[in-house]
Length: 406
Image (cartoon, rainbow, N blue to C red; front, side, top):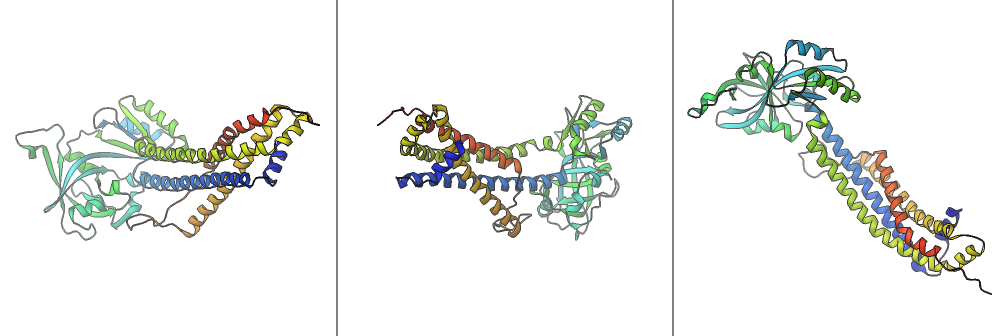
């Protein structure tokens, strides 16, 4: 019944045309705010998925590191127990340290990461090669696969390199102030390939074999920097993480992919919340228009309110009619906005209408991803703001004095 009255009030021609104009301004403002927020959120969702896919190329489902210090001790019996955990599909032992990479007069500080033969089973770095082959060699003849940024820094092309690169690794437990070079081991590695994933990785990492790094770092037989793990089912990551933590104890830290990149994901989430805050401000402006439109409608319908009161309508019933009127305005505006957002996102997905400026991106258009929960959040927010904005005019309508006239 409330909706019937509210809908008729919305459609009916008003004696003052300004009421219609202000009402449609409110609807238009809500529609554009809703569409803008959903399109922006869909773009953020698209970029978030893209970034996560890039980081998942390099970061594994779970990672075991030391609770304190830079290395862990992992005995053969502990490795055997790890293999027994059902949800672990594979894992790779890692030795990692900062190193100086030199090609004649060109130098770069890199993160030298030694990995075992299982590394290609826990990450997809091999699929990101743009040059050469994924060959890491052995302790005697180490090979290197590096990011394209490192290639540029040391002026080589991995698939055309002649000769080896010199790498300087710090000796563990050696710190000679009088002769700093005695604190480093010097080795030679052959560049065999280059990957392009994301700038953070391309400008930082050089991959080589595990035994070479452990030997030059003077690691103990059971000493490693980390263990990187791939799971069979990522939905059970909390259970698997708990099992690993219980097995190894408190001297080890087990991190999920999110925890390994928590700062990045938190920044992305904060940006999304910031846009939502701006959306609330835009809706607040639209709400003022709605208050004006409903206040003028109350003045317009004073005679109707008197008639409804004479027919037995109480104050609560009249207030609900005008509250519903505000909801109708918001529903029309948000409905138009949602349809507009769906159309724009569909066109972007199909025809790539809005390109990314520059040529250094992995994709050449703005990615978008529609998430159902975003639409629900926006609809609920618009509904709450509409009720809040309608409260004062509806209260004023309900407080109209009842007068019988001849």
